[in-house]
Length: 324
Ligand code: FSX
Ligand code: SF4
Ligand code: F3S
Image (cartoon, rainbow, N blue to C red; front, side, top):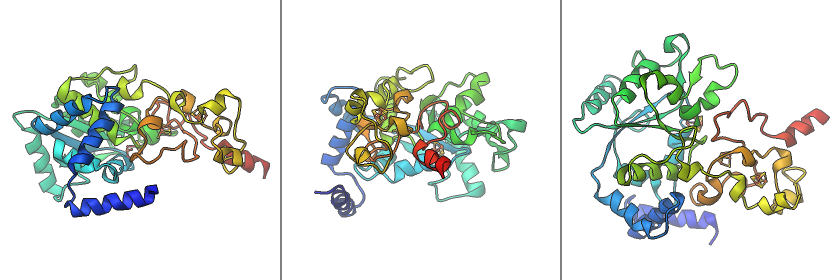
């Protein structure tokens, strides 16, 4: 069955099931999460147990300076139904892009969620405009800088979702007029240390895997820049299916070349896989594909230096432009 047919069949299944995940898909997803966490297949049962039996933790999800691609990556997931699962696993008590209410109603919902006697986790998507006291980013009349400090400061734990929230990302690209920075940098003076789930967008499996780890084993081991080692412990290059061509010195001369289509290495036309820590080759997106397998270079989207240190992204096009 082609992947398009498979996805259509999944969508039909989902409609027939009233949008809920079947037991089979749920267990399959638990297996994917267990594998992404570097655990043996038997751990899938522990993942299922954690997701089913734990009391749903309250999550306040804030949006900073960003493209909302992180949320889209979760909502557009098809196979399996990560969005459904996330909604069933956490109690999402505030999220501007998903809640029906707006304005004063939303502000009240936020204050109420922050008063939860059992506490809450805070997820921040997007960078924090920090220049000029934060005047370049406001929500409900308050700067993101001040509002997010209050919300994150009162949380049991903070997850920075995406590269913008982790390190500044696209929003911090030169000349960075709003002084955008990541959550860790913005709130270091308050002692707030987020778990960074980087990627532009991040993989939803890495988000749910982090939630599972928090529920079952507490804080995951983090690398030097605050990312869970279980997801960001090796480079894209380490597990790339084009790697054998890199090792053999077989490099595609252009993206449209027959060598690129035959799976040769994309390093000479811009791939940053050797310098990029992420699990895209093994986890993929939607269990369907990922940039390098689709014929695009890894552009380093999960790294602290992304955007400026990794651009320009397409040397193939750049070289053609120079020749023209
Ligand atoms: Fe966009 Fe998220 Fe990139 Fe940033 O993703 S996908 S610009 S990481 O904050 O919405
Ligand atoms: Fe490494 Fe990129 Fe080549 Fe894959 S395509 S082997 S990640 S350089
Ligand atoms: Fe990003 Fe590279 Fe993966 S661009 S999505 S880290 S292949």
